Length: 569
Image 1 (tube, rainbow, N blue to C red):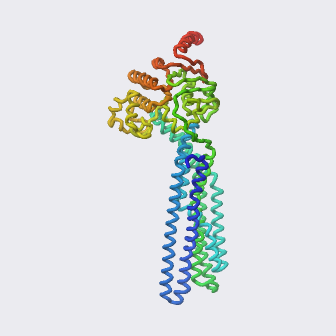
Image 2 (cartoon, rainbow, N blue to C red):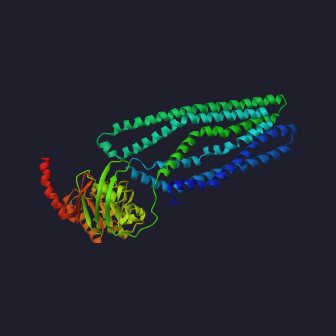
Image 3 (cartoon, rainbow, N blue to C red):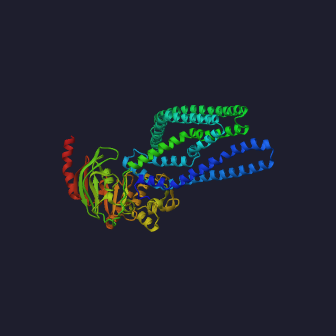
């Protein structure tokens, strides 16, 4: 199922539960038929038992009524269980695909999208499916059954029921027409405020240090207040219409008794029909009244379904199904142009070079030259607008990510560690191979440091590795990057938080990777690490300025230095 296109996954998930929806519809039919029993029971008691003073008839009618009510209760419980299981199956079926979708949204939007909206929409749909509000839509089609019985009692009683149902349906559609747009806008703005709040809270240290809490709180409250106004406007209209609906229903149920009494006095119906007609009217109006009460939840679920369906259809991701052999590490970059996700600004243009396996290439250049962008392009994190990055001849996006990941190591500038043990973080949360974990820690020079932690490799880290210093996080991230001694390793400022001992350990790590035959790209501003490189790649303003053996590039840079100093003067 997970290999299906995302929008096909949603369609198949709903289609797989078609039999369950049909079963619930059938149960609803029998439940609504059983709901006629109390009215028939009341009719027989008034018109037959009381008039004939027949105790055996009362016993028989009472027993039959109890049997039908118990059966109805079992059917009611059954359809609730069916819909609960449908909601669970939908969640289990869709959650993996939506998790991957959220990951791609964050990755390709440059952080503009939170990636959690699709899962929130699925949760809303699932909760509505499992709620009692949904059953009103299954019960509403059987309202004509009650109206037909009321018409059988007397045309006026049936007509009163029909007019009452029409009034409540009109109120329901009026509620939809008046509140739909405001409710949708409020929902959109609440989602936006939630995303903004998450962004603020992720930077709580900066907010605290620089006294930004009050300013950001005011900004967030202003946006949140706008969403609150729209929501309150929709809720106010809905509450007024619900009050009108409830008042009308009570008045009509009282009037139907008066009408029944009038017809009974005229001897056009029996006293039992008067009581039974009132009961039937209540049953006929109950699903419509329940629909009005749950309309907000239904409208929200409908909006979530439409948004989720559109999101899945817009997702053009296709997964490579053909696995490729383990890479050797040959990298060839062919005239690539790279833009940031969610932007048209060109960050790299017309970059071409190649690196054989087992070489270490240093990437240098001034700030904002495009070094980190090149690192993301090399790993396929950011797609190329033009050109291609090839690993062993295959375009990097042709590689199946789950299998390629075992052969790739990456240390970004912002070290993100995840909640779990040290060993789980090093092993990338796959099956923990103790031998490979220790080897990666030793390759990164942090084995002894880990042993000094409270529980060693079993020490649990908080989200982001909060218990560790910046240098410790960077070295642990390095151990994760070299876990399994991958064939392609990209290190972005790996010594930014390291002291002298840490840099010495990093030099040893680079030597191990080179002897292992790994192809390494090293982004750095510090000349110490350049001695470990075989080649240097110089970027300037998003373009390739120089590329070649280290000594030759350094010599060229030294020749240009006096000229640049004169121009600066």
